[in-house]
Amino acid sequence: MLLGLALALATPPETPPINAQRFRPSVDAEHTIWTDDSTVGQAKRFSGRLLFSYTRDPLVYRYDDGTVESILANVTQLDLLAGYTVGRVRVGLLVPIVLRSFGGTSEDTTDMGDVAFEVKGNILRRENDRVGLAAYGRVGLPTGLAPGLAADGFVAELGAVADRDFGPLRMQGAAGVLLPPEYGFENVAWGPQVSVRAATGLTISPRFGVGLEVDAATALGGGDPDASSPAEVMASGWTRLGAGTVIRAGLGAGLNSGLGAPAMRAVLGVGFEPRVRRDTDGDAVWDDADACVGEPEDTDHWEDDDGCPEGTQLALRFVDRQTGAAVPGVVSGIAGREVAGDRQLLLPRDSYPLQATAPGYATVRMLIDVPPGRPSERIIQMERELAQGRLQLRVVDEKGAPVSATLAIPGQSFERPTATVDRLVAAGAMDIQASAPGYAPAKIPVNIAVGSPNEITLTLRAARVAVVADHIEIREAVFFESGRDLIKPESFALLQEVAGILQEHPELLRVRVEGHTDNKGSASTNLTLSQARAAAVREYLIARGVAGERLVAEGFGESRPLATGENEAAWARNRRVEFIVVERR
Image (cartoon, rainbow, N blue to C red):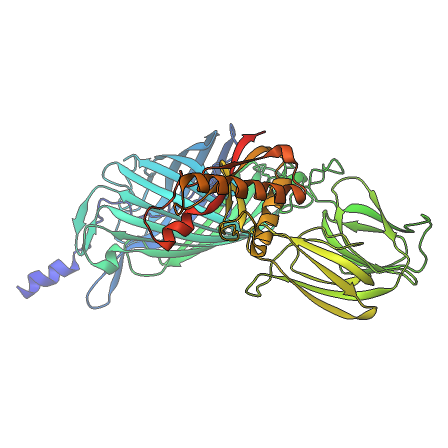
């Protein structure tokens, strides 16, 4: 029994009918040798690669006592790869040729490997979608006869590829399912596998680049996890010689003792890879002619062929508003620069705050819009300095929160709404007006003192009036003296807002002012009272600037109640004035 056991242990292990050569190079990856990216090449163009590889110990037996015996010790292989692109789809052919497999217990051989056909389709383009995405499918034919380097049947693989560029750095990854013929031996369950590859590539210059990639797989059929889950790492580099020739080299090794993870793998190859014309920044200027890849051309009919956004040559001239003569001694600040006198600046198109001062003139503060295109000139008029005071204005709501409002201040201009003002203005009495969406316009009289800061707070109240569909909605009631058509003073501000809304909306050609009452008193008395109150409101609006032909007054008495019941709440709701849009342009 001991002799039989010894003879059994001494018997060389058989070479299983599997393909232990896991290295299947990419047909068209730009930065890596093994890991695919979403690239499919230029439409209607061929590409090709010839890769020579040497693999050390891709298939070994490891005994319980730690002894390692090579089944495949040395494999030299030539991979011929070709691809052709149609639209967003690239078809590929992979032809492996085992130049020599020698050493180990497997017999030395030279033979064809398993030929494979591949289709890869681009779904998202990096240039347009920031992230590249592609799907691929590969079918391997059982054309190989080399022991341990040929599958015993067809092999299918389906997967997806994603990548993204971060400047010169590309991150890419691929995941797929590999379906070889199932075979079980020793502690390995060879069959369906999930494979994952991740890589990063760095373009050092248009002619040089490096890459680092990791490949890993795990069998879905069980078996020893260590033996059934190979992993490998490879570092590589490439250089482009001219427009179509690329030299590639890589060196890698297995990260564990999984089946197919070699002790060492070296790759050297040459490819015919026509440079793909790209427009990375989407400015319709190809990268190879774009002096500013990554910065889109501004397309302003001024030097639009170089791919770079050009600044605008802006000339600033400062003149006296009254005489038109040049203002001497001007010092201005724009785009972080201090400029003396009239000056020409080269600025990207944008809006820039400008501040200009000159002896005897009021300080100018304004926004300068720099348009794209040909050189332009801006003439800034300056006012001779008068007696001025510093206005420090805050616009707030009723709770004290800032409100960005459109302001009207005599002698001042504002490019956009603001909640604060801090500038020199003409001294003396003036009215300051402010308006903002959702708030009632406000106007306050102020008296600006010379020199010292004038701190003023202008409070905007929430709007109580709005045009809604077929009527003007008022969010407060109009109050009258009891039993009379005399409007109470607390309703004046509300009706002033109604007048303002009518003036802001000239398209409301005719509005009916309706009066309504509660049901206390006789119906005829209420009808007469409602008519008188509607007429009183109409006259108030006419006195505030609304054209009389746009208004008609009509009373409805108690005939159109909003609430029922004999209580104060119902009566208060039914006593009302409404504004109905009768005709609109």
